[in-house]
Image (tube, rainbow, N blue to C red; front, side, top):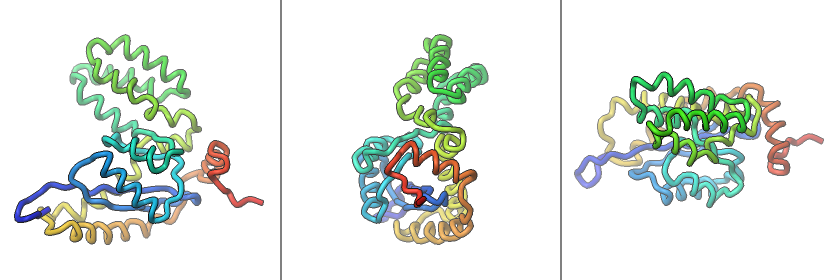
Length: 232
């Protein structure tokens, strides 16, 4: 971005969601320089002011300050950190010769059928790798409350919330229209381009998520009065 004659790096952040009918939509696009709790608070406040009344589960990629901002604006929302992002970040700090073995042990944690089994596998992971890679193992333990939310649900719901793939797929589409532009003159010029790209992408989002009837029925049971199924 060109700002006062200088080139400044900024990021475009998107927020996507699934409504009660199982349909995806893009809730907002925001331009920012720094990821902070203040920035995310402004984003969530904007979403609330534009009509978002409730968020059942928020899947995020571990951005700094985001869980705290969610708790302030949507205090009833359950937060799930993207497992795929957590795995990628973990492997950055594991030696290449150990990555295959480490990942094999780690799979027993995040692919467990229950949280109890996952915690037992995490203990095994800690015993085997904790001394060699304490930062990685401690990251899983310290963030467990937001890494393990998906264990409460059945596979159809887990498939939706354990990763931010919905957002990642959207970003791949947006990069197609921004990759040939080295510099944007203003924030608005970028937002207008992304807006048009999003309109093109979302016109194809006409089919509910797979097995949505079962998913929304289970969510209505878990969240009780917060989900109205319009059934007499």
